[in-house]
Amino acid sequence: MKPFLFGPVLALGLVGGSAQAGSWECSFGGQKADGWLRGQVFLTDATETKPATVYDSLINSQHSGPIEARVSADNDQRTTFKWKLRDVHLRSGFAPRINYTLTRLKNGNDATLFAVAPGLDDFRNRGGGNVVFSAGGKCSER
Image (tube, rainbow, N blue to C red; front, side, top):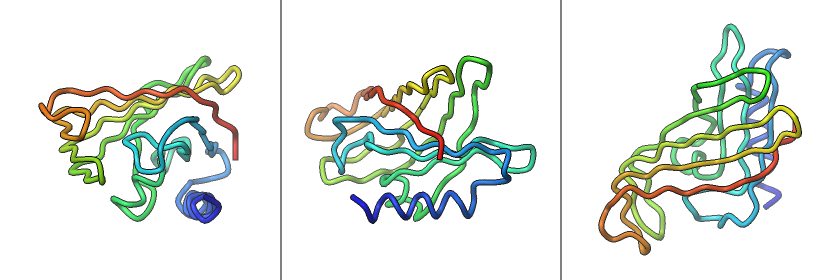
C-alpha cells in the first residue's frame, strides 16, 4: 500500500492550490482495494483561484491523477465534496455513473463517504438498479 500513499500526496501537492487550501487524507476502514469505495481518499479545499480536488486509487485508474470536486457545503460544522465518475469498469462489474459525496465534520474530523451508482451491474446487483454504498471514517490534515 505504500506506493499508493506516495503518489496521491505528491499529486495533490502539485495541483492542490495555494497555502490557504487545506489538504486532507480520509481513511475509511473495511473497504476493498478493488471496491466501489476506496479506503483512502485525498482532498484539497477550494481557494479563490483553484477548485477543490479529490483523489483515490479508483480515480487514479480512471484519470491518472486528481480530479475536480464540487464543494456543495462549507460552513462552521462541515465541508461536503461531490464528484462523479463515468463508465467505471471493475473486476466485479460495471457502473455507467457513480455519484460520490464525502462530508468531513470540522469538529473531530469524522467523515462519511457515500456513492450512488444508478444502473450498477455487478455480482450483487444484476438488475442494474440504483445501489448506494457508504462508509464512515476520519480525515486528517496533510
